[in-house]
Amino acid sequence: MSMLSLNNIKAKRGQKKIKRVGRGNSSGHGTYSCKGQKGQNARSGVSGLKRLGMRPHILQTPKIGGFRSIAPKNQVIKVTDINKNFKDGEIVSAKILFAKGLIANAQKPVKILGKEKLEVKVEFDKNIKLSKSISI
Image (tube, rainbow, N blue to C red; front, side):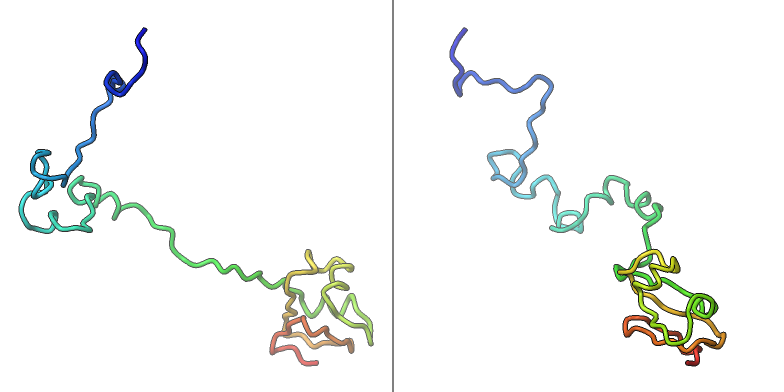
């Protein structure tokens, strides 16, 4: 068996050499680089999809639309839940709400919603948001 060197390396069977365009006239693919003369498809930056017939398929496929915010959503609590679970003079904070089982996560923001009247006199932590309709 002979030693491997550059002059006896062979290409893998069934593997075609790629067409290298735009490498001078002696390559056989110089001057216009297999694009013909002038026109939109001869210019740079033109997608080959139009020539391949893929454009209609791309236009037909549904695109993912919309917007998803990375900001965490508020955990909603009703005013009636505050009235049931708290007494006068207590402080309403995320940790206490979590301890009482009213919210799932103490780190995420909390907002209290409802058009009912707040019957207990409680103090709200500065991190808890209230809807405008709540009268304290």
